[in-house]
Image (tube, rainbow, N blue to C red; front, side, top):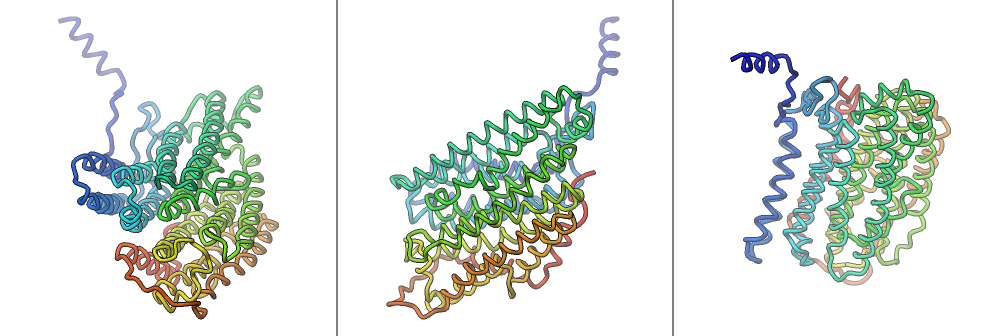
Length: 510
């Protein structure tokens, strides 16, 4: 009896080590991952003629995961928190998380719509394709909610590893295999460098939770300062690779050319969002104490990235095979430079500048996915992916030509693509407010450079076509993807304050 009494007293005094899981907070990630498993298992039992059903299950799952964000719109949920420090949580569903998760899941949904036809036409293995796409989307959706370095790295790899296989999904295609191998080797190297950086940070601070790391880096012992600084630098390298920042950009053109077009579009938006999200979390939440290190470094990277990306895009020959995909690839590198500007500015004028990167990312996601959707439509009759193949597209497919022209004008920042102009002004202002006048000047020069190749492609759409035009009916899933992205871009251009309302103020839980 005495032993039972003692056990009862000890149980009452001991801290509760059993964590309660907020299932609603993690629902978008869980739904995406669960549907991926359902697709993988269903693939074993479905006859070949019923395999297209897997695509529609994936589309429905991504739509459900996106809808699961609605109950979380207050942005006040967190789970997997330390029992001794409830403020240190591994999963936080704040406004930053929700906006990025919406970008990722909605972008994956558009990719899935374009992929439905591509998987059938190219005879890619349906079960593996949809499982890998959903797995990557689940990792990408987990990453913005991650608030410790271990979860961050795991989410990064869950988003990246399936992407390697997706790039090489076209069996027997030499370009696809080479692209997958290059993407894999370079990404694994970057991840190894990041893991070394994380281990250095942990050795210097004794914690992996971002908020605790931030507090402890404020007062690092002198003998550990060099170790901490090296850890910060190495951790940033891996995320800089994912953002395709110069000099970690070399994998982009060949990977986009070798990948199936829907996956190239996916990498250009969701893959980039993964990198920028991780970069934002480690810089402004975990490493503000070393802003004097990463701030100037990111500013230089932004200038180099936008300059090299736009210069390379400018040099693409319209008659060269795959020139359209290569131009979009180099354009995405240039756009990455613009996205880096507010992150660098956050080192000088506070983390509220991050809203400018998020606003730009939302605009870029809609119009770039739309551009790849139109490219997938054109590739059905002109598989060489040349810019010259788009000559006279308006005579053949008026709505596709108008949509692509609008997307290109948004990327250029010209009316009527007001949302592109709005996003660029927002980024430009963040650089000026942070005292980075030189970076604002570099950005302005690059915007002018980009105008040339965007307008050249746009003008080509409305020129007199050469030869007879091949008219085929557009598959409705691809047409739906083009229409959805075009409507989104038009609505945002008509009311750009919608994005400002979402991204203004503090996006992070205090």
